[in-house]
Amino acid sequence: MEYAWHILSLCTTAVGAATTVLSLIFLCTFALTTWRFRRSCERYHIGQHLGEEPPTLPYWVPWLGSTAHYLLNVHGLFRAVRAASPYGRPLRIRLGPICAYLITGSRNVQTLFRAAKELDFEFFIVNVSVKAWRMPSRDAKKLEEDSSGPAAQSLGGVGEGGRIFLRLRDIYHSNFLHTQRVSQLLDRWIASYLTALDRPHGIPLPQSWSCEWTTLPICKLVRSQMLIATTMALAGPQFLEECPTLCRDIWDFDETFITLLSGTPQFLCRRGWDARDRLLAATKRWLRRAWAEYDWQDEKRQSLDWEASFGHRVMREREQTLESYGISLEGRAALQAGLIWG
Image (cartoon, rainbow, N blue to C red):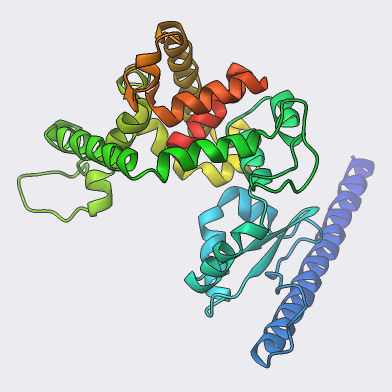
């Protein structure tokens, strides 16, 4: 018995020492990163920051940085970033081996988009499709073979299937920069939206709903109707038939998007995983049905800007281009679902 108590005492002492050491490490890490952050902010205020990396948000755990905060409460992390950057300057957050740059403020976002011709968004599109929409790796590798970009002048190598991003850009330009087609798309969206508004049973009401007047954010009041109208205008009625839980699934996915993008396992984000899986399954059913019912030999039907199988012409031409490039059904479903969500 005395020997057991001796071992227990040693274990307690070891645990206490380890706790003290870890606490000191965490405190020193936070003090050092806070000092660096404030020093970088001071240099920013006096105009000596040009050519330097943005300040890194202070953290407690060495190397891991803000990873735990990012995985468990990403919205709280973003609020902390905004509070730490009152002037809207870019900040960095450390996520293990990765340093992520967070750009806030309307001025910075406008500056970013003004440089759109010099920026490559294709990597972002593929990355989101893989991590958030579970695009198969073989499809991602095939898309990454084309590093030429969407511009008319090639910026890099071209894969075996040609310049896929240029072909997709041409589809967007021919449909969304054409005045008559855009006008027809808008008219269809308005008609679908007004039809959706005539269905009050589909409007989400607060749980504490009563006969008394209540305040409800206008976004929550009409967002489902706007989503249905947008989906009808883009993908047609057959998508809604194959995905009857679209409104619930799309908003569950939207709320957990950043968590899914970080690669969070299913047991930590079951709601987002389940919503994403239902959306992908519905999108694959819709695509199989559209391919089976659409007559590719009917020239009159191909001239239509909108039809019931694929919806708008841009969805049909996009699907045909991706299929001819060699993207699988799973990969195309990830890209099409991403377009509907985005």
